[in-house]
Length: 368
Image (cartoon, rainbow, N blue to C red; front, side, top):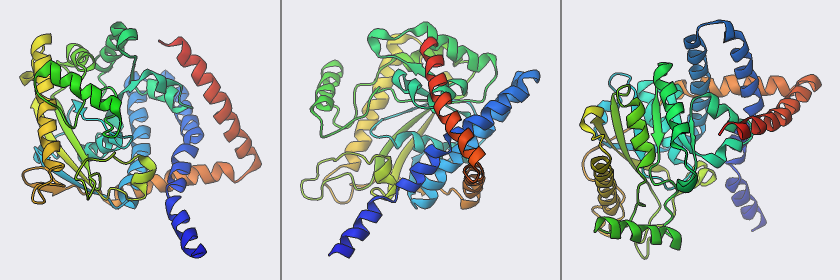
């Protein structure tokens, strides 16, 4: 019994090594990025941006090594599958939001186009104080937004305009719900009721979408992006076998333990010219997209065995080759091991971790 308990305990901790490498490599990543920032200061800005996107792409490939290659997850893609494998393009990406893995799914979907380095997230303002990465995301042209009452559209407009001005390749990832859907929390249920009142139709599996981030994005870069990607995500093993009710989606540790070995993604591409720009029409369009998400998720969580656990229609399993993710692990792992192998390296590592975190937080406190 003790041996069995030990095995179970070790299995439950298999997320620790990936987390340690992804988080532990932050000082190395910031050091390399800082060096590139200094070196490229005398070069055209476009050169810096390409180098930055390359570095971000390497880190995203490291993420995919753990969350796709190691987790052996199957990603079933439905809908406009061919659009993912066509030309590389600039896009605004909107998705339902239910767990901390959702952003990783965006990275997976960006991989066929080679757009992993081009991902820019719209993030909650509090994340700007996340050690080291909170500062870096700002440098990578991610956009921080505050809650409705404190939201400053001029700041977001300024940051969005820079994407177009600097001609940055962009997948702008937005979660319009603004927070995660959690089926077991009353707060989520209350928000569903609000959306039902506003739209005279009951949403069972999504929250009321907020318009502002999408609206500002289309206002500022609508003539720069090619498309709006509408993505609906569902995770396997998130339905109670006895009651048929939906359960919470996995967090990152659970996902790395293969709690959801399959992910189902419905992908719909809209040409940006087909998306309305006028506020009332855009709001109607966005709610219609979330109504469609609710229908798709209702099918996925159906109690009918022939429907549940999948979206309607044909799907294709996304292939992400190990050769595209393993080199990132080797590179990052070598950098981390090399730094930690010497006392001088360890000293520098902890100085970057400490002073980089403090300095980044101070900097971000002045950048509203």
